[in-house]
Length: 454
Image (cartoon, rainbow, N blue to C red):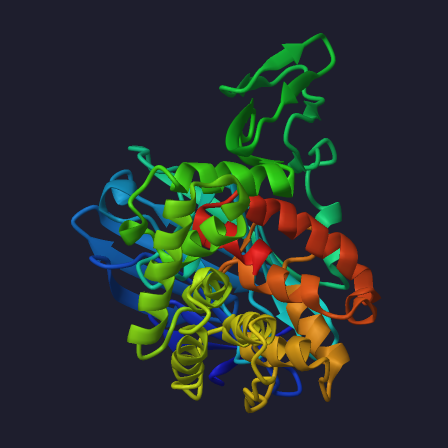
């Protein structure tokens, strides 16, 4: 029996431990699909037959079975014992090849999706939950997966999934519940759930009649649970604040803290909102940012940008030496973290504002389709394969599906695409995607929201 399973226009290979490598019929890598429980579960049985692949894991909770069946569609069945959730629930991971868009995950209880991008056709491979419960979880390594739940359940359960190639992200969206409203709105706006027979749990203000429930969404991320026959649908609803109001509120909150305890992203937010803060606090922020920027082997871009902005508060006689210190720090690492090239632009502006000669801060162009390559293209306004780079970036934002990327945050991509030339983003519905994710980032913690001001 061949190591590869031919399914649709793909080849699927069992790599062991529940990992399945998916390639196009032409041999182009699509990604790795893993549906397996983590430790302490141990794989005790793996068998191929004419219909598919069966995998069995064991722990003190009993046996957990995963069955892959390849026919017209790819069907996955997960049978887990009653104590599986207590030990460690099975999870669905998607990993993309290098330079491919990041996979996208949406786990909302009774409805869940996981999406891989198909490079040869610019289509997507969708994994859809048909039965069961799933929610996005994040590991210590920053990777996200779908935990097959429900969490805390003490009952044995069966989950069913189906995978199929689709022609576009729009086809994925078309498969979502038709009544599902936009889950990202401006703070203070309302969403309407046209589910008169469903129970709805939320701490948000609601008004209900015989046809629908109207929910007012304040700033932030909020949970709304819709109880239906297929199980609870747990929705994360975002109320995006106005940018200036949000910056003012974050800066005011940070001003009540000791500047020496602030993280680099918080220093940057305090710097950008400094017009509303006490002068002594702003001076302390500038001092803290400068200390972090010049002392680190690889300066955090937010610390570098905050230190550059803080030069306007320094003694003019000291500014040339401080600029030299920051230039040395900014160019110390040949492969600095994403955001560093934009932070260098803040340093250039600060030096120019102090009457110093224009700074020469060259940066080598990274190859391929990655965040560093996108940042270099945006800062220099040049990219040899700009269309493919934009496709990579926008697909990594999940278009306009609900959910989150399988790895990394939305902030860096949103920051860079907001700065990119409009003509680069206008193709393929880019403006709408960036605007949606910008609102989503604005609802996040300081480390995410700071990207909107870099």
